[in-house]
Image (cartoon, rainbow, N blue to C red; front, side, top):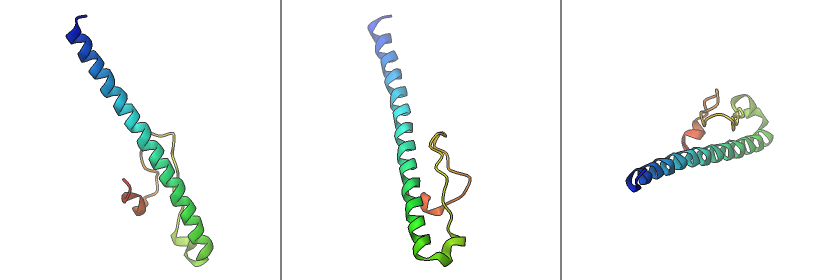
Length: 80
């Protein structure tokens, strides 16, 4: 393997590592946002119990590939 091939292989590896890191960071941020959203939702439910049927907690699928939970939550669109 000459220097040019080695550099190309290194660039490929670095770009793959960056993608993997970016996905992990995105997953961590999304998980944190879900936790924060759930905490705030619980606070609102305690403060205004008559709103409880309209408010739902979201699932934090921290093990999935960053996809959204089954429930649609328009508040999360602000952070996506």
